Image (cartoon, rainbow, N blue to C red):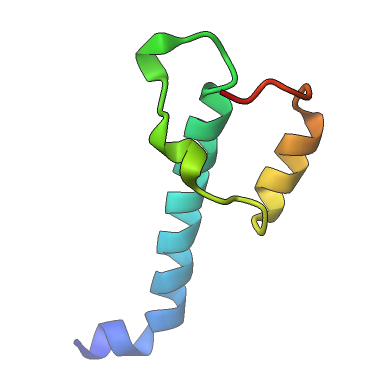
Length: 66
């Protein structure tokens, strides 16, 4: 427990980065015609405040969302 308290901010950052990266990958995969990896639920998530998504979204063709 002391370990968790001592490194709480680093653990929180690592979890946030890993979840955000995976979710961004799913959201990008939705832009392609790949029914095997389609994730409709991820489209309900708001990624607007994630800098990595902002950069990716700017490079995606308009109207390519599911």
